[in-house]
Image 1: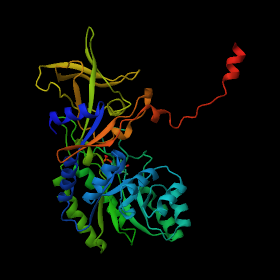
Image 2: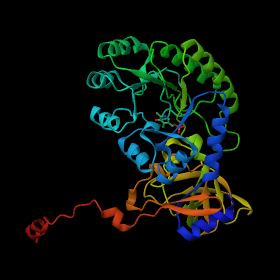
Image 3: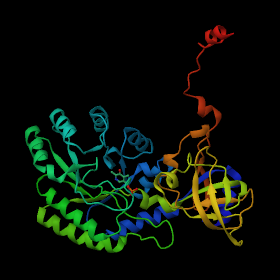
Image 4: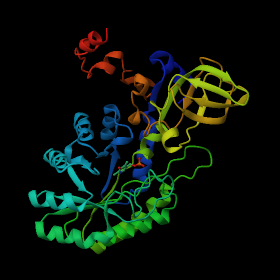
Amino acid sequence: MENENLLAIAKEYGSPVYVYDSSKIISQYNRLSKAFQKVKRLKLNYAVKALSNIAILKLMNSLGAGLDTVSIQEVQLGLKAGVNPNDIIFTPNGVSLEEIESVSALGVQINIDNLSILEQFGTKHPNVPVCIRINPHVLAGGNSKISVGHIDSKFGISIHQIPHILRIVENTGMNINGIHMHTGSDILDIEVFLYASEILFDTAKHFKNLDFIDFGSGFKVPYKAGDIETNIEEFGTKLTKRFNDFCKEYGKELTLGFEPGKFLVSDAGYFLAKVNVVKQTTSTVFAGIDTGFNHLIRPMFYNSHHEIINISNPNGKERFYSVVGYICETDTFATNRRISEIKESDILAFKNAGAYCFSMTSNYNSRYRPAEVLWHEGKAHLIRKRETFEDLIKNQVDLDIFNEIEESIS
Ligand SMILES: *Cc1c(COP(=O)(O)O)cnc(C)c1O
């Protein structure tokens, strides 16, 4: 998007505001589909938790994507967006049997990641096809908070417990129609992913009625110059060949599934904030902006790097700034970052603000969540209004029982 477009949006809808460029989402979707075009049955399920606005879910649906969901509420959002329940997979971790049953009753594919629920669900609903989430114990590297395939991980059923799975399947007579893994978001090395895939293929051979194998996600997106990006094209070529060979071996044309979140939406997003104050201390120049980790938690939570550009003065002389939020505790977006000269009231744009940004916002410090805007074919569309004071208090229950305290102390 051009700086002028972003500035116009900040002017019209106020700041802070999230903006998503639909053309970026579409091109990423097409890029992934193309990398796997030689797979006969490919299913890309967008991971809703990355960015769950209904307009985004509708866009994904129109592209032919299904949805990967982790809560019944995400399923409900998907249904509200008009997605067919058959195109939704439910891959929760640590949710109750009741929630899984409720989602299953909606016609959504269930993916189970622990032996206890597998046995309970299989006993009560032996006729409902179930996918199993396997943990292949391949450490995806990167941030320990987002690597979910290692040996101590709470995700998936360990490959060392396959005999337990098989016993449960046999005892309950349940039907396993899919095998799944999701090893985390930071796979840099295609060979590591292919190695994990071999473990999945080995596991798949134990089940005779599979329809699909779901390889989760793990596509790395560059956040700054020099970051490694998963080479999707090379990965597509290699996994396609291996998958097609496996299908021959298995004797059936299976569906190959992925559940990308970040890959589809990260780069499409911009977060725009206004500079409230430029504060020069003895060692640092702070740019204090009209937002905080309540609206973009990734830098504080994961140490994530987001590029920041001063779109009000893109060609100014570069200086060093620490960009900080307005939350009353340490709230740092960037430290000593080279940014073109900042004046108060300038608009800063955070890049890669599509995935895990709005969806992790909160009302901390009693601030309103920002507005969201979709940029589609050269036009801005408001897809979520900024919250108001009403939103802050709408579920609060105002009590009328403190008069006595007041009376007793007076
Ligand atoms: C979060 C999640 C994803 C998406 O991960 P990205 O890194 O955003 O691509 C995929 N599958 C499951 C089960 C997830 O929990």
